[in-house]
Image 1 (cartoon, rainbow, N blue to C red):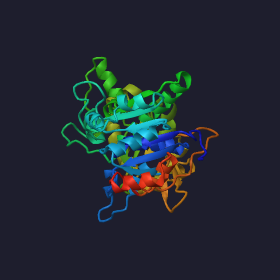
Image 2 (cartoon, helix red, strand yellow; image 1 turned 30 degrees about the vertical axis):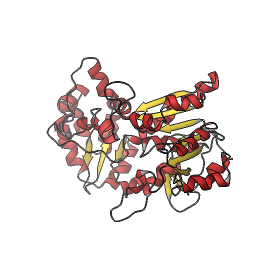
Image 3 (cartoon, one colour; image 1 turned 135 degrees about the horizontal axis):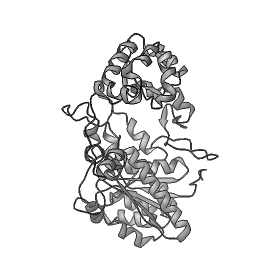
Length: 399
């Protein structure tokens, strides 16, 4: 039995791609037993995407499928569906992100499965929600989270700039965390009432939540103007700057009354405090473009490595714009347990984004091969060897 706060909790991950499976991964980090259902053959289509040109190593798969057991069964066949129904008797959480019409066709909709196990938590992830005109539409995080929510539009450098494409999983992983939260809340309700039910979220809901500042403005009737280019930022003290070596950092000096003097002293520009254009917060806002240009010249005189200790000593909040290489080698990320080693192989993985005091997470195990645990899962469910052999002959089960 795996240790952890969710030890003894059985989860069936009947989802694909990222958001649904990643929610199950979070549960596994805290000790839940997760059975990953995949179609026989190639398995989950997310396996097939090679993130590095010319390589077939399933790096992405290792993140979303770690700690799981793979059960390869064909749910399109009655015998495969019967296997799922048998497993549901001892399952606490079922997770899927299949489109609603597919769930109905496979007979794995909430109404079907809750009839078998009323205590089941049915974790449901969709693109656009489960009601309304677009409930049956398919979508990915790039389309439903990033584009539909207004985020893609708001991060353009100028209104004329082409829309910016999102990176893979950029909306999926936050949505997975929301689905985990919904499932955990539903489990708490079950503890109080004994009743299971649907715990759902959608990419659209999470995209709107992520764009909450601007969406809320609009909901109160305010016209939301597009973000101006960097040279016309409303505050020069909350802007990006480029150093001599071409490296960028983002400064966020919001408490100007307390921090401005020490900041100007640190960058050896104390005379700016005497300039009437920059004497007050209001005047600095009115002349932000001029101050940005001055700071551009100042920060261009040294490399980022030289500016780091200067800004840190002055108590300035800032962040270097990291490359992926730097983010993957971040010492602080390792020290806080955000990047952790696999327990059964070389390399690191990304831990789920929160911790509980006194509750260690499960050491991550490598993702399984397609159907690696099929026989073991079925034997645990009470299947005899001859029954397992028959399912193989029918093409329902793959090991």
